[in-house]
Image 1 (tube, rainbow, N blue to C red):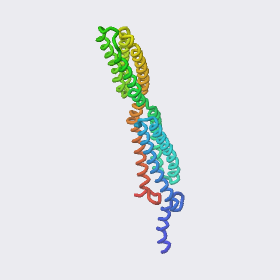
Image 2 (cartoon, one colour):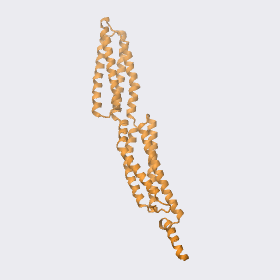
Image 3 (cartoon, rainbow, N blue to C red):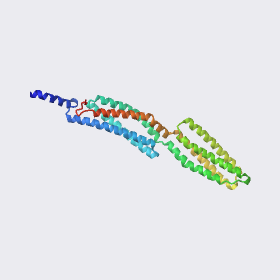
Length: 292
């Protein structure tokens, strides 16, 4: 009778042994380790995704670069966790979880490719640099142009009205270029940007024509101011060329669009994989046998 009663106990003990007859504690440690790795994998992936988003939204080169470094560090940690978890699941004989991890790894490879594109664009910050030029040095040059023209005097009092009209027109044309800079920086449509640049070119020619027309009708005492205005216009137009070039790179706009479209889809796919993997691991009983 004792042997008969001992038989069920032996069956239970055998069932509680993990892979290949290991003792229960060893199996429990492996299951616990697999769960820890699955949890850390989720945390590191979330950190990588969040840091990448902050890199895209950062308003300085330093902040973008720092967040990009954080994102890449977490991404490397994710890849390391995948390798460790793979070994743990294989040792436990967890085929279903291994398949889920393989699916995550496949989606994560696509995520990493997109993430590198996003981070590479984000750290360039060309739109922010264009904006800084437009509202900084560009604004200063435009104001210097305005102030220099405002000090001009006509060579002949009879030309006073004409000088005033030409000065007003020259200042207006520069302001027209400034008005177009902001939407150019924010836009991602090549055709729209081209049309804006054409309008800028028209205003540039008008400003140059106004200065040329002012030179013969301003007083000799005003010539230094006219030269200052010409130098300020030259500086402003040089800066505008830089602004357009930076704006055309559109790295901030492109990184944001990529983050909100293709990368978002890859992020959702990876998150779904991790949720399913953690759910599968959570259903494992203490013996490593799936609970019913």
